[in-house]
Every structure is written in structure tokens, then in C-alpha cells.
Length: 132
Picture 1 (cartoon, one colour):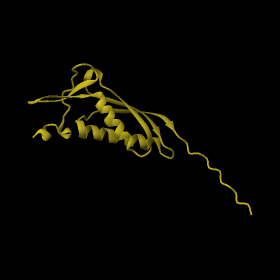
Picture 2 (picture 1 turned 60 degrees about the vertical axis):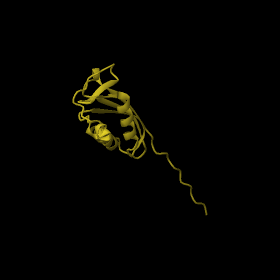
Picture 3 (picture 1 turned 30 degrees about the vertical axis):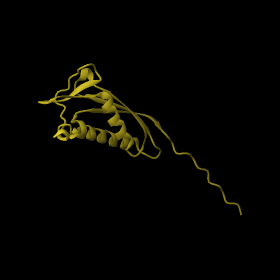
Picture 4 (picture 1 turned 90 degrees about the vertical axis):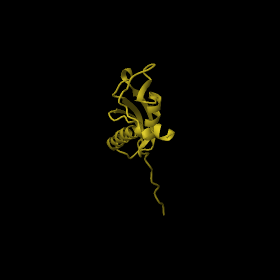
């Protein structure tokens, strides 16, 4: 019973009210009490999801929750690996972050913004000529 109560997949963010400031918000209220989350938790979830995506070197996430209310806004600063398309990597990042936030926290209408800070270009390799 205890495990079912705290199962993250069943959380619904129907009321998103601030309790002690902008970094804490209410995830769920039921007969047993209230479950609160912090924006730092969402940031860590988003960053861990981002670094698993092919083509991303590094990722930093910041979550904005205006006055503790929906919609959440997740802002990413990322670096992309060489030979990866910025459009494809960004699209994959947006879809994966939205999916994981829905599955884990019940947050369905989060906005994801991406700022690409670096794309490492492939280094030129000089070919050695064979001398006979």
C-alpha cells in the first residue's frame, strides 16, 4: 500500500500552488495529505534525460515556475557533439523531456526551450602521403 501511494507514475499535477516560494510546488493533494516537489528535482530529471540523448555533450537545465503555477518552463543550455543535426537533437530532447515529466510527475504541459552554446566541429585529419 505504501508503495502504491508514492508511485510517481500516478502523480497528477492538477493543483500547482506555491507553498514556501517559487522553488516548491504542490504535485498532488489527496486524502492522505499533500505531495510537494521542488524545481531542483525537475531540473535533475531533465538533465539526466538530456545526457542520455545521442548527440548531446553536456546539458544544464533551469526550471521556471511562475509563482508556483503551471505551466512549467524548462530552459536548457546544451552542447552538441560533432556530426549531429541541431534540429534532430533539439526535437529528440523536447520530446523525451516532455515524455519523462509526464510519466514521472504527471506534468503534461511543460514548455521546453533550448539554447545551443557549442557545436564542436570535426577536426580535420591530414592524410599522410605514401612515399615510394
